[in-house]
Image 1 (cartoon, helix red, strand yellow):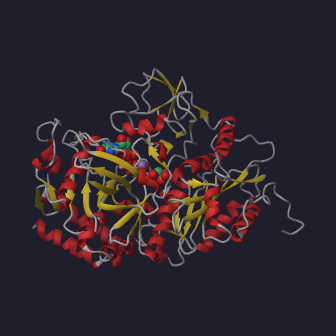
Image 2 (cartoon, protein in one colour):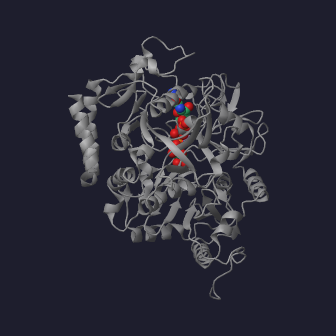
Image 3 (spheres, rainbow, N blue to C red):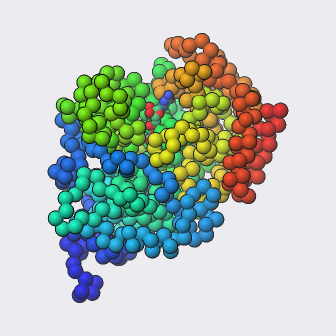
Length: 606
Ligand code: GTP
Ligand code: SPV
Ligand code: MN
């Protein structure tokens, strides 16, 4: 530092000698000019200090009814991922592909550098070392987030292995992903802060070649907790392409049959389409047991035995609150009752608890809504934002599998793809092969949800539920899936299934009860793998015969199951031009194997 540079308190008390990290932190502090710098150690004392501070600032309300837990409400304009403000800044626009927003990395960096200049004035700059995946991994995937948001630091404590352990793994010269975040709300001397600082201008930028993340203007979830979607999917998908593994938007669950046989399953559904609920499923069929390993992200690589092994890089659940209740997801409710959680944009009860649509059958008589307004039984408005979330440690979920923190991961028997489709797509389809399964994933379609800003309920193609999370060209990504299938014996590869819990009858009702009843579909899939369940060979793949599903103890309205399983050639013929349109959007890079699958589907449909 030159003599003319004013010293920023905390800047020089770094608990590391890592030169690249020190240089980046110093450079960032000089650009953003915070009042002080704090190096985070991830300790319980740090959590207590931060949460006290957030309570004092009015951002957090400490809950009376759940230990060590907090309620907060965001700015009403900062409630979800902002896909239109998310950028992949590769050197060549071709590498970002047709599905991502692209900007030249130099142009993006100079634009954002001007936004970052002085942006932390009046605030504290936190430096949070973190590790995605077990700290004991041979080659741990490390990162360091710099942020000026206490909410982000507290959330990173839950969502990642943050602090001293990660810093120790970094050593003196370990590789890490620098992830810079600011809410973009500097304070003038004497200016009062707001409870949720943010900026109307938002950028969520990724630099895949240099493995960097720059985020500005939002304090919310996937925009701000940079270890999650930004690192573990967008940057990691590029690492995975280069290193021969898969970084996927998938839950990981362990299924044990009454005979004690264990299978591990991963599943990719778009945001707000059922990953967390399936991961924590409480089976309704006797003798079957589900345990959870992850609810949002899976990193999968081949083991020495040729099988595909999955690891969850995360440390917490950032789950959709509405719809989570004792009937739908009792294991999430039990997890939350342990405490140690942050609730964002749900309602607050008068006695210091949280509530949201679906939390319990009858709402309390009075609530404070996520918009901090009074709510009574006579009110029409929602108490909670549809994308309101709980943030809670995986380790305290009562059905977390003991091996969830194992750096080797778990061997995967089946991969489920699924979307939210009111029509056309049956309850479950088994693919004919890895290539056909890749086609099912590549052409996955789903109605948009409140997890991202924009219109809700619009059907769009969402390959492997990765559309908003691809760090590179969608065509190259699909080719990477095809190539992955060639790297192992067919018999060793997971079997691929396609599910739809959201098909509706003419009257708009869901045809399938979902949630715990989805265990019946898991059982059928395992029985198929073991060769003991029946299926119909349809133009789109193998679909259960109605009596192949174990329906014991389940009463369904007459005709619903048949309708949920139906493959209507008319509906599928209407799907063909939509798939063609999607492939045309991807362009020349659509793998020829997937074009072959499309032709095969066309022939089968006649
Ligand atoms: P993200 O965290 O945004 O990636 O979402 P997710 O894929 O984890 O979805 P989640 O499990 O949180 O479910 C989203 C919404 O769908 C919630 O409101 C659930 O109650 C609802 N849902 C989940 N599973 C089912 C199901 O089997 N049937 C029906 N009808 N709804 C479901
Ligand atoms: C999703 O949108 O898929 C989420 C929430 O899991 S966020 O962390 O905001 O990406
Ligand atoms: Mn989820």
